[in-house]
Image (tube, rainbow, N blue to C red; front, side, top):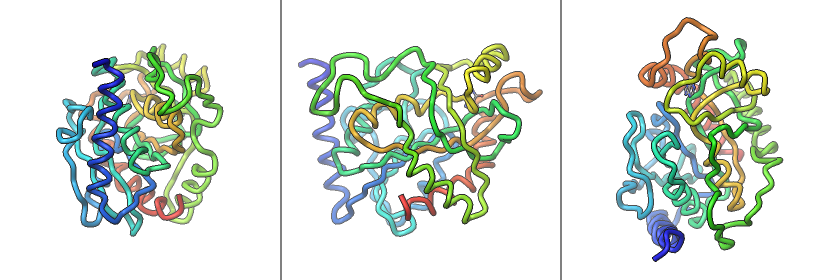
Length: 277
Ligand code: HPA
């Protein structure tokens, strides 16, 4: 069987399991939790939990801070699907696990994908442990998850991404942040492939390109979701200044530690935002 046919079969089977687990709930929002942000999962009321291992084609996770569970339940009274953990393109060039996750939740009825990640700031006013609404992105991964045979059943070959990050939903998240006294910057997210952090020269280059935050994720997720017609909104939790912009030493442990510092505001923001999205 071709890789693509296996993928289609996986999406059918995984979405069937998700729909069955939803029971009477009809979640329209799926949330992907980034590095160090998995605490939001604890806020889900009466969650039904599916391990990624039980969902065909879902990723097998290896990175600390990424759990590998899909939760279904209510957040602030709103039915949601939470994808707690994902695979990055520094781990694999295989986009199928991420495609399976996103297309399965779409097939299970989710229309909006809320993305989150840990990121480095490229602008001093955007400080460590603060949040940034992603208004646009730069794909510097060197790959696009939509490369390869296109299955028209999921979406078109050529995807316009002029409006990749939904303006209307972004405005709603901004309003919620304001109402709740949460600092929410906005800006452009640039994805580097990693796994090495950037050099100071690369950070200066990204600043010159107009990027405001740097990370190693979310861009593929956004492209896959837009391809299959989902709306996308996303927030970065700033865990450090970009390389060379401060004296701090970058490490994954440092990212997780500082993500924990911003996680409270992140959780409050998403909890309040799902009510209005
Ligand atoms: N660079 C890339 N990815 C990151 C960073 C960074 O500075 N911080 C958190 N994720």
